[in-house]
Amino acid sequence: MHIAIISDCNVEYLKKYLAPKFKSIKAINGGAPSVTNTIEGFLSLGHQVTVFKLSSLIEQKVILQGELLTIVLIPYKANKFLKFFAHSFIAAPIIRKEIRNSIHQFDYIHAQWSYENILAISYLRKKQPIFCTPRDWASYIFKISSLKNKLMWINKYIVAEYIYSLNNIHYIANSPYTQSLIQKRTKQTNIPIIPNPINDSFLVEKREFYPERPVLLSILTSYDKRKNCDTLLVAFNLLLKTYPDAQLHLVGTPYTEENPVMNTLKKQGLLKNVILHGSIPHNKIKELMLNSSMLIHPSTEETFGNTLIEAMGCKLPVIGGKNSGAVPYVLNHGICGILCDILSPNDICNSIIKLMDSKTRNQYINRGYNYVKEHYTQKSVALQHIEFYKSIR
Image (cartoon, rainbow, N blue to C red):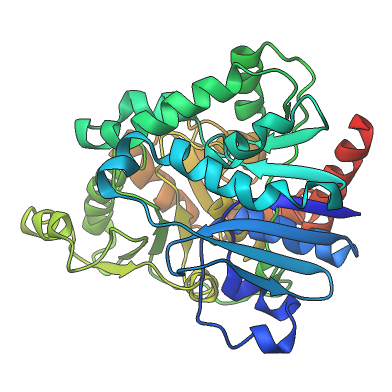
């Protein structure tokens, strides 16, 4: 089977599936760990995969090839102004141009996110099955964003609303939360749920070390209202009254000493015992997980939350929001992690103290680890995709 994926992905990680002559290329990491993990799941089952990915680091098209994997890097540098207002409408034709001549090669075509990637192949929807996995919900993010971020999200909001108005697109939800949103918006009732997969390297069978003091980890892709970092910082300051030697590690692009916002938080006294890591390689995230007491996920909304299953795979107990979109689903409704009022610093602090009890901690880590192994492995998720693809033919 030959599957086309239109999406960002981590090229550096996937180099191992490319021919030797391509392994020396400059690192083009990319993001989308859930998509990268799914691609690897397809490859592990022996399927052929071609990925179409935009890249701002190249001047002309680059094709990287291996026995089963092909990655087509498409040059694209967005004008700063147009990036706010017309990015997807400009990027989609560029992707479409590159994929148009090879359409006949693919058994299935799957776009990730509901923006330029699906817009690029929407013209095919009456000719052959096309698939789309929305991985965020633009209308919600647009609604809660600051004015500055609203400018960034207005393009995505418009494109997503247009895409959901089209017929003959086969959607895949990664949680009941996204399933309900898609069903409500599209009026489709047969949307399957296929969760994001964990990278199997995060499945740690044996783990004995846990710090005696609270060493908290939080991985946040942005600093905005939705990620709710300020509430976590207030909760951590409350925790310091009970555990003055506690630490909080913040991972994500905004969380660096150079960021003026972090300097403001420091002046406000909210960064005491807080270590800012910025963006770090995925293997370093695993290392941090294996040296932490627990993962705190303060986000008020998630369509899934890959860091949750990665933490459970590393036998790291998790705290998440009881009303945070897909978080309760991923944590099996509180069986595999503590669900609390993530908008309450006191509730977060009390949940942290609760997890410092080794008996309580062990109950959550054992249930969480077994749940991840049963539901979120790469092969299991890839097989669910294959079964759904075949059901449409």
